[in-house]
Every structure is written in structure tokens, then in C-alpha cells.
Length: 490
Image (tube, helix red, strand yellow):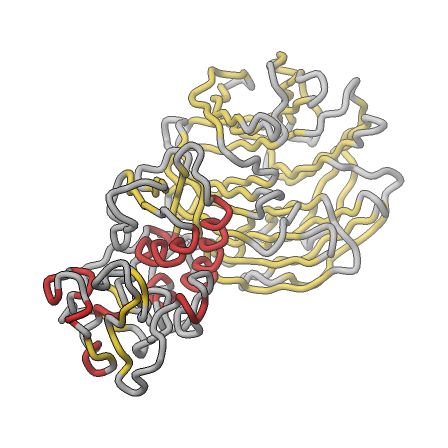
């Protein structure tokens, strides 16, 4: 196995949204089957939200079949028994019946006298032009079982041989007696099979560039650029230590340029550039004190330019630039109060320009620019509500443009622009699922582009550009592992 029709439509960007009918009884079995195909085919099944093409999985249907590949729109998949999930999902990802492939007569003898309708039964029709990706696999989950009761056999209430293996007439065909319909054969998982087709698709998630494990966790990280060189700033709030490291043009971490230890931890930090100079801001959430410090060429820390203390801790704080002026937004997640404050060219704290109180806290927020418009996007991780709101010149809060709900909370989110297209990435720490979506120029949420699932949650993730390439870094603060990956223009 594998075999596909010559004109099969694969799922765009290897992502397959799905939903179950209300009360569907075999959800766990279907999810387990999805996990097997994810590993074998390199696709990702993602709970459906608003995607135009998706699976609707139900128990009762005209038959237990799915269209082969992506059909477009709402695609009904009938799975009336839990042990049929692997087979039907195989059709979903683009696979035809193994016994329908063009070379099947070289491997099996058809027992037409034992087939309901004989040679007129379309479930046994040979595809003269099939795309045979691997060697014929008599044990494939996509092969009808034989001997079997049903499965196109005649009489349908008796166990009959509909096909026999030429090399050994006693060999039981298909996945039933061999894998119990619940496991893929070794050849079902052949990298030269359906996986090879999906890997030919161009997707925004690029290759992993580097990986490793640090000696300590760094829960606060950001990137900045000075004189064309990209750096990473990493801070361990527990140890109060920090260091600056080069991010090389090939996406790998380079030499450390400076390191030190603070008196206090600063759990919230961000960099900003104003007046041709680069600074970074930090706040301690317990004492509520804040500072602004300059960042210098060579990846060095310059003088502190401003300090102070807020009345409250603001666990969410993000900068933005509009009309040639730099501001930042902050929200207190307990009182839901928010403010916008200006950041001045000499690294000083400017005046507050707007404030208010929302009905909800938004645990993850970021800003992004589309043309001459600036937007704020956020999600509440409890209710899973997201919103996009415009930010106006003068540091004012504009109106909400769009909002909705996702099935998952994405504790990590960041925006990036590549090839003139605005994207944003998110990962759920619960399901480990990640996604890449487009953001539209009018401030509305764009379509899902790709989704996947990492082996673990990476609590710290941020984008960076180096050597004219877009990358991002992920760091797990539990086991201290990290990676860098490239993001690719479509």
C-alpha cells in the first residue's frame, strides 16, 4: 500500500478539520484512528471551527464510505462501527481500495462467483490508471478482508473468499484477522506511500533548523535587531539571571554577547525601537516596579533610561507603533483594567493616552500592522473567546472589528509577516496542537492555513528574522528543551 486515484485532491496544507454529529458513539476510537494516520501520512486532524472544507462524521449514512480525498465543503463520513474508522479515514486522506489498483491481477485471483453482483460490483472494480505508490500490500487496512462475512461477499450472511493471494491461497487478506481493523500494516506506514504525496505540498511551517537543551529554563524571551544583527534576550525569573545571544542568519543560536543577574525578576518584558534607538521594558509583577533600559550594538545592555512603579501588575503588555509614535498596551488580568501609554524617543515613559475596563481578561494578546492600520488581537483562555480591535493614532483604543470562539485555548501566540501576507501562529499547551492563520487587511480573522501537533507544549515561542529569513524559537520550561524552525512563504 498505498494507492490513490490519479485525480485525487489532497487536503490543503495537510490539514483536515472535522466535527462529530451530536451523540456520536465512537469518538475515542475515531480519534485513535486519526492519530495513526497523522503519523503515517503527515496530516493533522483538527477540530472544525469555521473552515469551508471539513469532515462531518456520523454513524448512520447510506453506506460506510467516504469520498476519496478532499471533496470540498461539508464532507459526510459514515462510520457505523468503531473498527471501520481506520479504513474510512484512509479514504478521507486520499487512498483507494488496495484491491482496486491496476496491478492487482498480478497478486490476487478474483473469486467473482463469491462476490455480490460479480464483476459489476464497483467495490471490486479495477482502476486501470491508479497511482500505485508502493508494492501491493495484502495486509493493508485499505484491502477488503477475505475470507469475510459481508464486505461484498455472496451470500452476504456467510464467510466466503472474495479474493485469494496468488502466492498462498490460504493467506488471509486485509486488516481484519491480521490487525483487527485497528492497526495499520507495516506497508500502510511506508514513507514512500501517501506521506510522500503530502510532503510534496508547500506549507508555511518549514523545517527544524536546530534544537537542544539548556541548563535552565528561560520563561521570558524576545528578539531584537541592531545594525542588521539579530539577538535573543533570555531571562530566568526564578534565578533572576539573563543573557543576550546572537541569532545567526541560518537560524541557529550563536555566541553569548553579555549576561548578568538582576535584583528582581521581571516576568513581563518587550523590546521597542523609537527615535532610532532600541530599548526594552520590564515589569516585576509582585513589586509592580518597572524599568526601561537601552540595548546597544554588539548585543550589549546600555544604561537604564527610566524606572518607576505602577499601582497594579499588568501580566499582558505589548508595544505598537502608529503615526510615527510608539505606545504600549497593558491589561490587569484580575481587574480587567487596561491602559495605553506612550514611549518617548529618549527611552522615557510618556503620558497615558487611553484607558478602560473590559468585561473579560485576555491572557494572550499581540499587536500587528496592516498597511497604515494597527490592530490588537487577544484570546481569553477560559472562555476561549478571541477578538480583534483597532488601535488608533494618538494611542487611542478603536472599535472591535471581529470576534469569535475557538475550541482550544492557545496560550502561545505571535504574529509574523512573510511575503506581504500577515500570519499568526498559536499553540495550545493542553492539546499540543498548533496552527497558522492569516489575518485580513480589514481587521477580520483570516482562514486557517495549516495545523499540526508538537510532541509537547512550548511555553515560550517567538518569531525572529535573521539573514532575510523568517524563523521562530520554541522553549519548554519544564525540560529546558528548545528548537528553532523556519517559516516559509507560500
